Length: 311
Image (cartoon, rainbow, N blue to C red; front, side):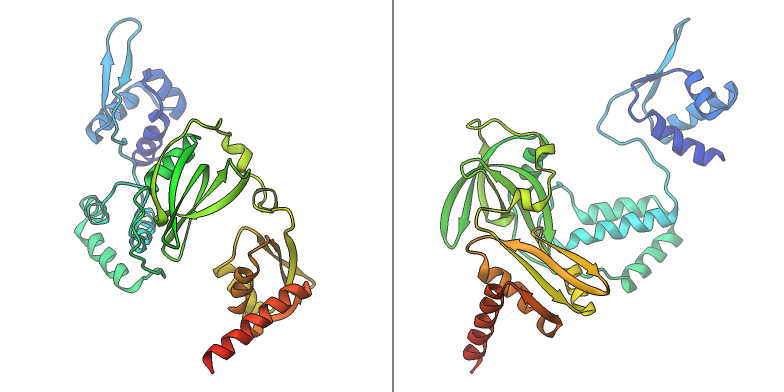
């Protein structure tokens, strides 16, 4: 292991420590005392806030701060991080208080001018598909904070120009086509439901109910979302239809491959017939069979209504 790799591993080794002794580094990295001393000096020059306590029981201490200690990356890792960051450009809001332009500047101050030029050229030819939305989510960071802290909250939700109040515990945040969605457990109905984050217009912590541990929500969709009276379905699709499934699908459905045939199996709750029919309309001729007949009937009626509308 060369010195650069060793220093990188050393910062990871020390990141959660408040104190350490020289022998800890010597034993962990199998290096001499003199090499360990030089490495500690190198870490200090890199910005790690180290101080030394002299004496018989002396040690090194690490000051606590909110800045991350320097971590060394290869250029391939820098490129991967950079373009991962650019995927956030599709979102009007993120759960992080950040400026993408400022992040890009920080990236560029850490690499050579030749690599900056290479990065800009890659940005011109390497594009990640996304759909830009301009719906601002004012409480996205709060939703994330309540979720990870396992807190119950009361939200005001605007839908169809009407305001509704829910007492929920959020446990899942997802994004699709430039929109943010949060799934929360509704304590009044004892059911999980999905909220569009930009439609949440107010929220605050609530103490009406005892919060549940996050682990309780890490269950399959049929335990979280399936209601009494739900209908199971099975739709056989072509290979091209499988590609459509990977592009867009919902927690209440799964894709199966059996003897060369693809099936989408899942369920829909009462009142969701139109929604599920609208979803499968996008598959067009890639649908080969539909079960049950009630779903086939709803889909046929939707298609007839569309034809009538176009005529």
